[in-house]
Amino acid sequence: MQTSFYKMHGLGNDFVIFDERAGHLSLTPARIAALADRRRGVGCDQLVTLRPACAEGADVFVRFFNPDGSEAGACGNASRCVADLVFWQTGNRTPVLQTRAGTLPARVEQDGLVTVDMGTPKLDWQAVPLAAEMDTLHLPLAGDPAAASMGNPHATFFVKDFSMLSHGSALEHDPLFPDRANIGFARIDSPERIRLKVHERGAGVTEACGSGACAAVVNAVRRGLVARRCTVELDGGILEIEWAENGHVLMTGPAAMAFEGRVDLATYAP
Ligand SMILES: N[C@H](CCC[C@H](N)C(=O)O)C(=O)O
Image (tube, rainbow, N blue to C red):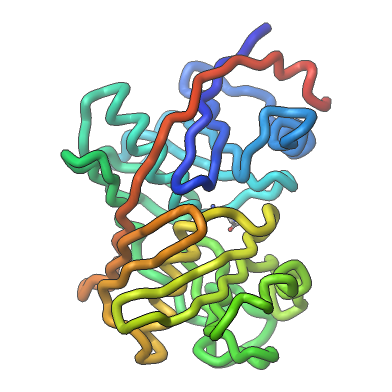
C-alpha cells in the first residue's frame, strides 16, 4: 500500500513530511531511520509528521524526528516548511503550529518568505537541559560555549574559524548534555551578522539549522556581541532572526517544495 509524502527543505535542511491527519502511520524509530537513509531510503535531515491539532487555536500538530529516530521538540526550518504547506493547502497565510515545544504562530509573507514565532528561549540549566546547576552563559567546556533551549537543546561556541566543527559529534554526546545537544559554531562578522555552522543532534552537520540560528542570536545577545535583530548566514543561505522585546524569537526565511512522492512503508524496517 503506497503512502504519500512531501519532500521539502529550508535552506537545504531537508525533510520528509507525512500527513497523518487522515490516519496514523506506524512510523517506528527504526522505520524513521530507514526512510531517512540517503541511500536505502528517501533521505532527509528530519522526518516530520502532521496530526490534527488539539491545542486551542492551532491548525496542525507537528512532530520532528532525527535520522537516528530520536524526537526533537523543535525544528525551525521544518516549521517554516509546514507553515508554507498549510498555506498552499488552505490559503491561510497565518497558520498556527502546535509542537512539543509549544504553539508557534507563523506567517507566509507576500514575497514567499515565512516567519515563525519560535517562542521564548529557555535559559535555565534545567530547561536546556544540562547535567548540573551552572551558568548557561559560560559552560565549563573548552571553547566556553553558551547554552539555550528553543524547545530543543543548543550549545553555541563563538569562534574565529570553523576548525572545531569536527568536534561536533563528541560535543553532542558530552555528559554535560543529558539529552545530547545541537552544537552551533558562530563567527560574529558584525553586530548585525553571524556566520553559523551547526552539528545537529541526531543528524550531524546540516546546511542550515533554524532553531540553531535562533539559539545563536539569543546567546550572542546575552554575551553583548550582536543586536537583537540579526542576519544569520548558514551554508544553505540566510535567516533573519529577531529576539523581540517581548522575549519571543522570530525567524524569517524561505521554504521550498522539492517533490511529492509515495512509499510502501511496509518495505521500510518493521
Ligand atoms: N536536530 C535537532 C532537530 C532539528 C533542528 C533543525 N533542523 C532546525 O531547523 O531547527 C534536534 O535534535 O534538536
